[in-house]
Length: 339
Ligand code: 5MM
Image 1 (tube, rainbow, N blue to C red):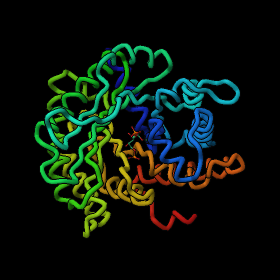
Image 2 (cartoon, rainbow, N blue to C red):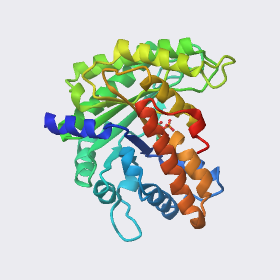
Image 3 (cartoon, helix red, strand yellow):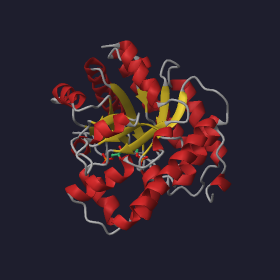
Image 4 (tube, helix red, strand yellow):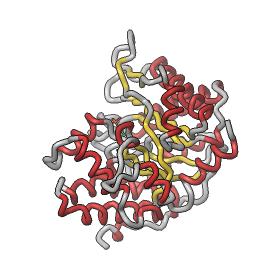
């Protein structure tokens, strides 16, 4: 493991004003996204859509890394330039989603655990040769029903995340560690904070036990937020306060960056929340974004699967990236949305 290299890649991804574009939708997920714009999901439509994203002018100012799906890492532009080569040439670091999704945890009704550890060492070697410099693994923690997650469910996911992270560092890839407490459900913000705290505590204990170097990783957590169906939605400042309180308690200062997922928040809300946290002054870690839907929803809406809309889609992506770049500095304001 080259500590200096890992730490330099992790820091480059969260350099000033920069964050991550999560474009690692698995085929079932991208199919759903395309269905929302009446577009068929084929290998070529997925390739073209990702090409539109990755060739958008100016995004390199705000995007330090892009997370790719296995298929996308192997695809190329129309001119035959492999996507990882294209991204690297623009100063954007290519990354790869390496988990194989969340499955039911045996004998633990309602809990899920993310799979993908078998053969991971060999896959990481191949991904590195294909140009990936970082990886991502997502654990899914559902809190929509009583009794879940169980303490064991949290531990099983934390253990898997730590085994993945150690394998990544051994292979010279920066692990993005993503324990996602889902927004689905009617739970209040207090319950989200309690479960997020439990998850982060377990994750960092396992990372430590597995000798993972905190300086050479990034954390991708949920924000602390009320469930989508909760009658009382917290204010922007309440979300910022609760999220920072929780992170300060459980995330070591040695971690270079925290790159939030958006989890189904509206794009403007995800930007607003990130901005509010950065406006609260310097923190031990960079506070940034690794948004999927909150960066891409406006792009899909502009694109509609039509080649004639490609430029508009790229414009929408750059606009969203720029606003999140401002939120990295705490200088975003809602009235900039119309500009
Ligand atoms: C982009 O979506 C990622 C892959 O999802 P699936 O494995 O379900 O297809 C997802 O892991 C994503 O990176 C994070 O959830 C962040 O995306 P959001 O949309 O929550 O910002």
